[in-house]
Image 1 (cartoon, helix red, strand yellow):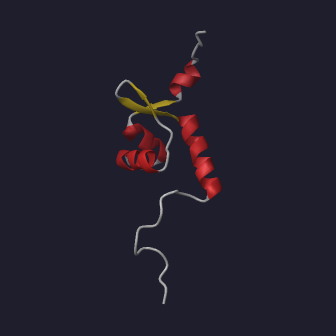
Image 2 (spheres, helix red, strand yellow):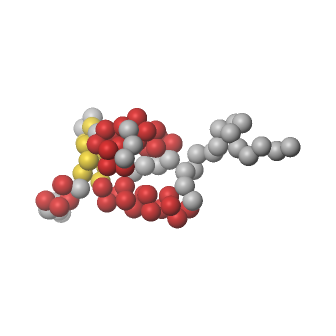
Image 3 (tube, helix red, strand yellow):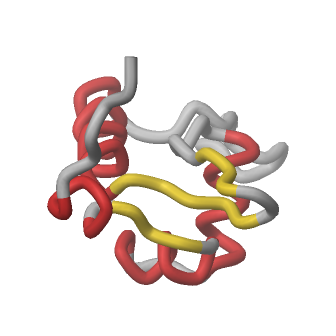
Length: 82
């Protein structure tokens, strides 16, 4: 079964980490880091990494609901104990 894609769905697609990062107000490098470590929802069209704006907004809401990043605090950067 072939599914037709509406214009709204194609406009929703961001092409490349720089575009994804700009949408999230971060650098392309930061977006790539989030994709590799925190599960930022991306997919590939050929060799280009893409993401849907709607999927990114859903991911952000999920991150907010659980309290932020899944990445642990780096050693020596947590609260100091006496």
